[in-house]
Each structure stands twice: as C-alpha cells, then as structure tokens.
Length: 272
Ligand SMILES: Nc1ncnc2c1ncn2[C@@H]1O[C@H](COP(=O)(O)OP(=O)(O)O)[C@@H](O)[C@H]1O
Ligand SMILES: Cc1ncsc1CCOP(=O)(O)O
Ligand SMILES: [Mg+2]
Image (cartoon, rainbow, N blue to C red; front, top):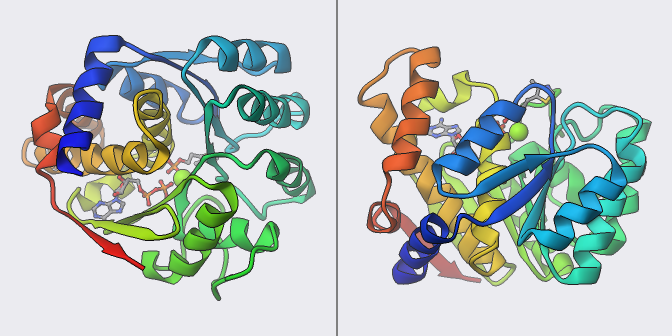
C-alpha cells in the first residue's frame, strides 16, 4: 500500500490534474490552495452546467455542502449525476447535514448517484448513513452545526455501510482518521490538535482527496489525503504554535511533502 500512496502523491505533482468543486463560502480559498499545494488544479463553480462541464473535463469532482444557496439544489445533484454517468469519482462532504430540510432533500437527490468517496467527521458520516437508510447504522448524536460530537470509532459501522453502498471509500476524520472501502479499515494517527482551530481543514482535505482521486482508486486516494494531512499538520505544528501562522505553515508543508514522506506516515490496515 505504501508504494501506491507514494506513487499517487508523486503522479499528482507531475500531472497537475484538475478536480473542480462546488464548495462552501467559508473555506473556499483554503480548499483551492490545498489542492494547488499537492500539485492539483482547482476550479470552483456554483451553476449546474458549469459543474457538469468540470466533471467532464476533470478527473474527479468535489462537493461540499457547507453554505448552501438556492442554485445548489439543482447543481449538486447535477454534478453527482454527471460524475456517475462519466465514471468520475465524486467526493462528497456532507458538512451541515441535519441543519434543515433543503440539505436533506439535496442529499436524498444525490443518493442514487452513489458518490465514490464520502469524507466527513464522525457525526456527519453517522448522519449520512442514517439519512440514506443503510443497513448497519451506528448509534450517534449527529453533528452540532459543522462539528463532530461522536468519536471516529463510533462511525465505523456507518462508514462501512456507506462504502458498501457506494462501492467506493469513506474517510472519517478526527484525532485518528479512519478510511474504509467496506472490507479494509485503515487507521491513521498523527496530525495536530491545532488542525481543529483552523476552519476548513476537513473541507480542504476533501478537495485534496478529489485531486488524488484523479490518479488512484477511492481507497488509495482517501488514505493518501489523510496521511498527507497528518504529515503536514505535524510539521506545521513544529514551526507554528497558533492558528493563523499554523494555517500558513500547513500549506507550505503540504507543498513540501514528497510521496515518500506521505507514505511513511503511520497507518494500520485491518481486513474486516
Ligand atoms: N485532535 C486531532 N489531532 C490530530 N489531527 C486532527 C485532530 N482533529 C482533527 N485532526 C485532523 O484535522 C483534519 C480535519 O479533520 P476534522 O477536524 O475531523 O474535520 P472537520 O473539520 O470536517 O470536522 C484531518 O486531517 C484530521 O486528521
Ligand atoms: C464554519 C462553517 N460553516 C459552514 S461550512 C463551515 C466550514 C467548516 O469547515 P470544516 O468542516 O473543514 O471545519
Ligand atoms: Mg467538516
């Protein structure tokens, strides 16, 4: 697995692959900068025809539901439909799930197109599995706004159920990240608690996973993203001790990390 991770990171740096996004207004700049730092090309849109166009010309697409506006009721399902039709990976971050009926409707409209990668914190993954009525639904409280109130391990059965449903991978972030394709479960330690003090760490991780998904299968792409974030978080925390300077150092360290650096971050894979 280590060599696949390293290859994914290095191929991305060489290819400058495009992964377009519909993403939230709070963190859009960090998402684009993180995608560029790992070697990708970023393009953010809101209208349906633009999203479909980016799905067609890009290698993958990222949808983050953080700050919905009316156009997203059409454009998010349209992007998911296009990705399904053209066999491109769609990375879905269901941030804000549970906040109201519009969000619920959009997520139900996306369900038939089975996004190949779901990325969220534990509470979001539990809530999505529950909303989509999947088999093994974990107990959990659901998010508080955009924050997790559940532990990563509490989301294991929900994550596996989602991955089996989509046929792709699910990445649950937290102090120890969990990535699963339904039968394999990877756990990745590292990173820094300062990552919780900068808004958009989870959002930008989703954007980076979409960039990696242009070069690798969903499980490898999601794992490579988690490891790259842990690496950059640790290195940035060794240089910067407060949130604003940490964010700057984090982007620099994401840019500096080689394939070998990312692949040598700690992770364990369990077959379940
Ligand atoms: N306590 C922590 N220690 C180390 N890394 C963390 C911690 N909490 C979150 N992270 C990292 O921060 C990134 C964003 O995760 P998280 O904060 O769970 O997402 P979200 O912002 O969507 O809630 C991930 O790379 C994750 O590994
Ligand atoms: C604060 C906020 N509100 C809506 S989206 C958003 C950003 C959430 O970013 P992340 O989930 O990466 O912390
Ligand atoms: Mg989030």
